[in-house]
Length: 468
Ligand code: BG6
Image (cartoon, rainbow, N blue to C red):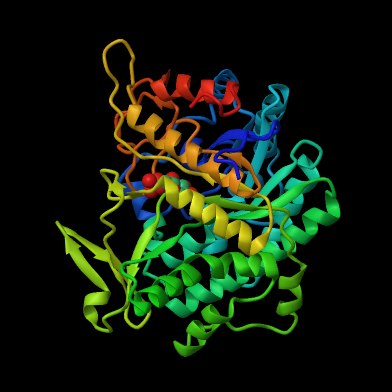
């Protein structure tokens, strides 16, 4: 029994971004608006219209990724650049942009890992009911088919939908379209069902068109600890771990709903309408790997069964605590927190990897992990982000232990390759190895500056994880 295992020689040391958070150029070269472009967060908290201006600086950025030594770059394609009408006419300028990016990555031997859809549904489809409308399933398949046909020779790794569980469980966190109202639970689970069908069809299509390619789902995954050894706390932790995570991966991998989750939906009368033939479609989806976004763990106690389960106030913020009869969030005195209140738990990564591997026996790609902070640009263009180095070092060390445990992890793509707009804290909260010189509203010169973590990660990759 070894304490650590060496990283495989072909381990995909990478980093991640998503289209709307990095590209900017929100209405250029034929791109149509997405739901994100129309959401309140975009208007209130940050300038998504420019983001990190990657659209105009793509070559400079890839050169920096190559200097960093990335073996893989995980990014998303904006549906709205490829099919501005959601379906139908293809926008050649959209294809051309991603072609340049992919060619440049391949030229530098950086494996492109492409997310098809990262929160940014075309607004025109949203106006026709979005994921509530079964026609969106066909639209997604048409969009994916366009990408598989066009880029199939150049891209080996595909991801279907980023964090479907976040979109369904926390729609407000990503942003509701302006003037939008929170969808009902029934509507959200119906949307979820349609996304599951779309995902299954796209995985099957990928295998048919591109037998050498690999495709999988990307879920925000975590482990839940019971607050005490009280059996009811253990049940509550299991409830939430299943509903929040396994439920989504079980459908993606096994092609059927998790029985506990289905019971939960039936009991509350929020189960989706399932059409004839849907069960067979779900079974078509066979992922080649599972991608996980891991940031933190949660600690769970038994529900008190009253309103105190639902929410509490922290300062001027209303925070969600749980759901009566299901679970209640609790504090964990054994872990730290970031300044945004996110639990920091590197050992939780090892545990989550073990559980995911045991459950699915599929290779795992870590597509996000990282720490958000308001990095400071100091004199001499220095960004001393040792807290990021500490965070990533500890997580990679636990990943290495997971490899020794026998878990098959094929790559590690921290969030984020370069600073991007945070989903709901704008540009004040950064994650990148590369600093982008802009403020929340003041765009400054958008200059790229290497952070301390850049040099550190470069060494990690160059030594294949030996030098942490
Ligand atoms: C993940 C998302 O949930 O977390 C990313 O896939 C997001 O899009 C990341 O940016 C970090 O969250 P935040 O809210 O700090 O930007």
